[in-house]
Image (cartoon, rainbow, N blue to C red):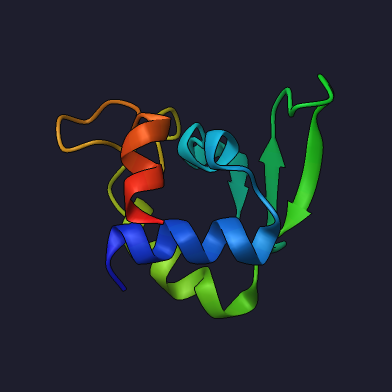
Length: 90
């Protein structure tokens, strides 16, 4: 699955805001427990959301070879995607 389609699927499937999904780091995903840790969500509290099981294999492929501090959905240059760039793909 291509990166932007996976971004949209994770956002919709786990109930994440655009700003939350683009700021996810590899360490925030627990693919064995099917959870994602969202830090400082809109309500200024951390929260846990469920990752749809159908996305696990694609997420594993996407994060393979990345360090735990890397962004899950990095820009072409390796940094964080902007909210605007992500919204263009929605």
